[in-house]
Image (tube, rainbow over all chains, first blue to last red; front, side, top):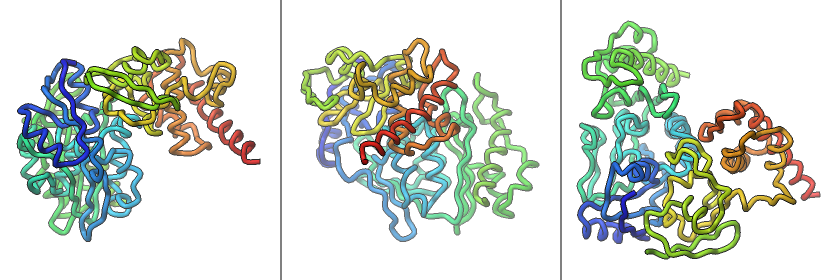
Length: 265
Length: 163
């Protein structure tokens, strides 16, 4: 790691001031992506602002038809939450299968969404569920936030809470890369009063995206039956040593079918 | 340099460190607690697993300063050569190690697993929960056996203490 300055504020307003005072400063949440990137010197920061001492950023609450999860809530906390299980059980399953137990004890939902790795799990859920991302300044619809890789927040913005409208059904299914355990392809399926959304992760270089062919089919009939016949366009998908675009296109169909099965189980 | 104060294995220690110091570097290089190992250094192998405030984490992927004020438990804090922890004893009894490099991390992860899922652990649970710990010698079979037996022994020890 290159050397950096470090602060660990105990309030959000202290964190905001530190962020405004130092151009290029980065926020540290659970550090499960940022610290490896710093260690590989892929990233160089003048100042790290550690959010772990700020209280109140890891609350999980049901508010009417919304499930609110604080940005600093760890994957392990989401996976063990009875509130999440009652509201959106598919999120418990998703959180409980990120990385490994030790990563889940440190990594956070806010860190995952802000970092928006193109193979991360949470962005798929946030877009499928049409979540709202609440920062210290505004609420951003997931639809706008995930419109491109690292679309991201403004320099002085801090993600504080994620608001998930509670759907009728939701499930996430992924095919993990056997070595890295990142999603080679993962698909999130949500059925809500506003319609059906299917979102793929791991398959596009620019991050998560909706899959209109599958959404149309599932809107007509929410069943796994017809999905096999749908051919997913592979022209914009990722090809790398782990799998080519055609393979990923095939996996989108398979993972979506499994997610629909899980929705109906 | 920044001051950090951590309670390691029950003893509060303070040090002046560079902000980029990792928890594992503080433990090994400053405090001489070399039971916690660095294997892959990329948060995959789990040789560096310790407990921070009771939860298993990879100490190669955590800044020491993030642990300021925290309670840290390392392999040195759970037993001694004369008085092995029941989980350590089970690894010995079941030949749960060959070279031993991964063992401290395996044991710290196993204890975290017992905290979360109790002392009756079936094989498939243990195998799934070992996702974050790699062993290149044993083929895992005896590690899985050792963890199941160690967890049971912890249960028996607890019962005995209660009587």
